[in-house]
Image (cartoon, rainbow, N blue to C red; front, side, top):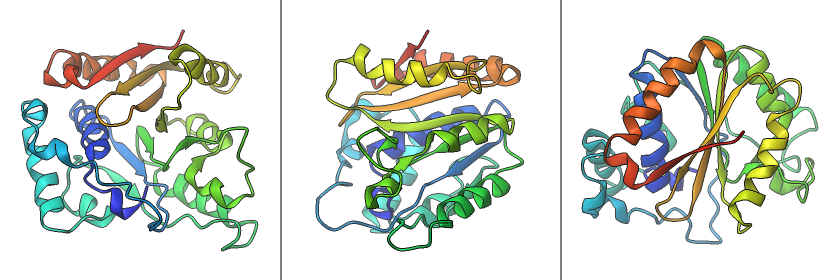
Amino acid sequence: MQDRYAGDVGDFGKIGILRILAGSNLRIGVNWYLVSDEVHNDDGKHIGYLSDSKFIGCDDELLGKLGYMVYGNQRSISMLENMNLISNAVYYNDQLLSPQESNKKFRNEWHSNALQKLTDTDIVFLDPDNGLLPKSVYPGSKLSIKYIFENEIVDYYSSGHSVIFYNHRSRLEEDTYLNRFRTFFQIDSLCSAFSFDMKFVRGTIRDYFFLIHNRHIEQVKESVLIMMNSNWNQHCKYLRLD
């Protein structure tokens, strides 16, 4: 996540999901996977939803608050936190530095600090720029800060947290694309999870993958049902992964 993305259509989708989950008495933790703003492209411009009538009726309070931030030129992670958009949420906003900017132990320390900060939460949302680290990106490369590492997801889940993480949709056919996650979710540490994908289809396709512990399943299912029976169903789709 970068400050310049704050308030774009992706934020409307993910924060909308997290607000509904928080309404079911699940405490939400957010690790922004915050990195410094890039300047070589125009990413973060996806704010047309703020004036698009198709988004009215999903979460009008959220729509109004994000519009206030965007149109007031106050786009930042700290602003998202300060607006108290997610009831009783806990945030980890330490910046993730690339291996070239830090020593080799930095990411491990950063991750350990995040686990500690988010200890007293039920569901942890992980929000990297791109998603789960692909085989094409080496963990020690400069690009690795755009991704979650598999062991980081496992650590959260093994610590008792249900996990949701963002992944930017690739150009592969949907079933081929999803097979990568099905395989990962079947490893011993994660195979007990109730897993599914919420596909958000406005702008570029964004996927939110869920790994849910048994004790949270009923509340999560109830939250998904609320979304699917509301105006949100114009913008997102529930996909089972089994």
